[in-house]
Length: 96
Image 1: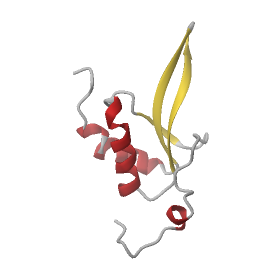
Image 2: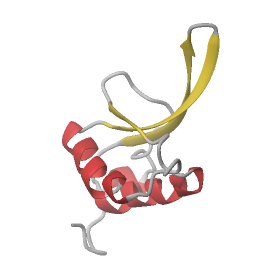
Image 3: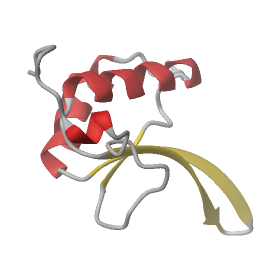
Image 4: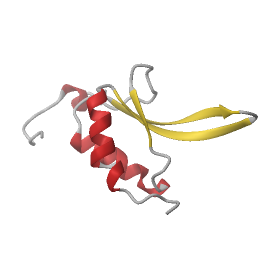
């Protein structure tokens, strides 16, 4: 956990959050979370992880349909696991 006195250059220069999903990022779908919780998901990532991340909407072709999916991506796969266990597992699914 970082203290207020720890300064991460990626935070300082605003390079921690990337605006696109690099291919080597571990991808976690956040489509099952209420759409109003996407901002809270990003805030949780910012406060509880240290590596680079992305939260993006991707278009996926499924047969003749084009679907929109929201993903959180992490450069460190361990942080993807931490996000899944620490944030996603505690969220109420919107279809429940």
